[in-house]
Length: 212
Image (cartoon, rainbow, N blue to C red; front, side):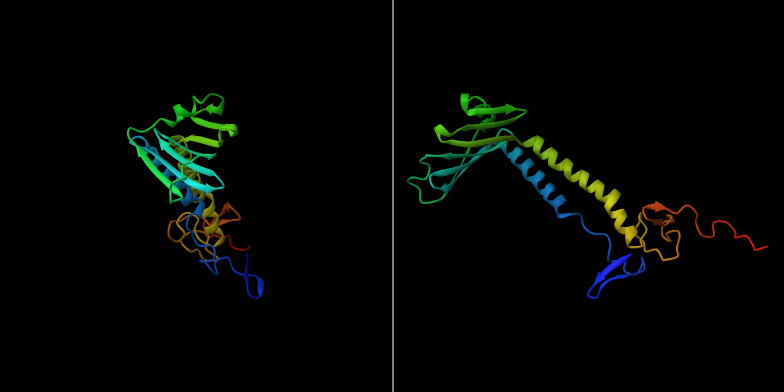
């Protein structure tokens, strides 16, 4: 194994520094996926009770709209509206009970509805000030994000963590340090793995033959 330091790359025994390739936390992206899945799930749960509308003044006469309700979330960009004409703030928020079914409303806008399949709706009609609008179903998105996080965790536990332990001279199963000459883990009895392959014969497993 080669390790880098201030003097450059130099060879080092495989068990010289167990912390160099020690068990590391899950990649940050996995945590981001979990957080997004929880957030989208919360939006879905709230949308069953109340619909939310948030408008942001993007300047130059453009307005960004964010909607949620009845299990869907959407954003849209429009121009020419007077939402902030008499307002001193750059944002507006309102909620409605019972919640509004934005998917049904967007799916029936005639020529403005450009796509409507599988719960996804895209609207666009620049001549009417509708630059772009996209609506997505919350539940499938949350399930997809959670599934991706589970797959990444499973891959880490089955492949990445095992590889890191082998490179660190540790047992791939329990992480116990293994000496440079040890063929089995002193903690769980797992055979040493080199280059991703388990050692076939264990030292002293059979009595050595005496020389004739």
